[in-house]
Structure formats: structure tokens, C-alpha cells
Length: 183
Ligand code: IMP
Ligand code: MG
Image (cartoon, rainbow, N blue to C red):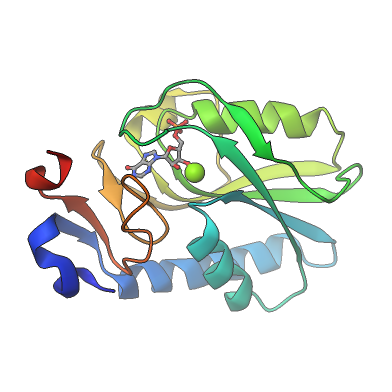
């Protein structure tokens, strides 16, 4: 569904699906160039990264492998709890591999810094981060993303994989929610 289908639920459309798609293609080109001649394992963080992983890997022109992790972060609210738990681990042994973590969004960076620390202990050859969206607070956190789709304001957004209480992941655009949705 797109923003027009659920306009009564939305306050403001930040990015259209076309804008997102165009940026994903630019990042795919960069990743292709940076990893040329090297094996690459893309590690997606479920469930938010499903859309970006799907679009990014298909826009790439070289091979990659894909694996997934699921970690708990937000529960059903809109504030980071700081509690991180692995719900589903990788099936791949990443020792000696070039790993690119694919994230939907970095807000506080808490989830990602835990994840990087965890994966680093498994001794991959390299570990980098790609995130589709990044909020200002993330810039002051210790997490450094090599590839960033868009820097966005500190607002709760949905769409392109991002949910509120499990919904809106299949919204093709990226938008903020109308106040009545929260009540
Ligand atoms: P962090 O630990 O604060 O960086 O939050 C990371 C996770 O919280 C992301 O991977 C998302 O799943 C979720 N999250 C953060 N901000 C938003 C948002 O604006 N909309 C939907 N989910 C979000
Ligand atoms: Mg996430």
C-alpha cells in the first residue's frame, strides 16, 4: 500500500517510494564497488530490514550471501528500551567473512552497538553497517554506519519495513503517523 491508501492514518510523508528506491540504487552501486572481488555476507536485522535487504541486494550487480538475525528492541512502543536480546541467530559461521549489517533505522544506536560487539567477537574479516535511515541521536552514539540512506529528523516514522505495533511495514512510502493512531 502507498500513502494515498491510508492518508487518514498519516501526518506527513517524509520520503516517497521513488526517492527511497533511487537512493537504494545509489547505495547498491557503492557497495558493489567497495566489495569488488571480495565475498560478501549481508546480515539483515529482522523484521525491519526486510524491504531494504530485498531491494538493495537485487539492485546490486555482484554476488552476495544473505543471512538474518532477529533481536528484540522496541516491543510495541515508540521508545528504545535499551534491552537487547537475540531472538534468532545467524545460520552462517562468519569467522573470516566480510560482513555488512543491513539495518532499517538507527535511532539511539543501542541495538546496533550491541549487535556489532556480538558479531565482532566471532572474528569476521570485516564488519560494516548499512542503514536506510538514521536519526540525529545516532550521530552522537558510538555506532558508525558506512552506508546511510537518509538522515531524518527525530520523529517516529513508519513504512518501508518500519512498523508501529506490527503495522505499516508494507507501506511503500515513509511517513509519520497522525496522533489518533497512537490513542
Ligand atoms: P535504536 O536501538 O534506538 O537505534 O533502535 C533500533 C530499532 O528501533 C530499529 O532497528 C527499529 O526497529 C526501531 N525503530 C527506531 N526508530 C524507529 C522509527 O522511527 N520507526 C519504527 N521503528 C523504529
Ligand atoms: Mg530494526
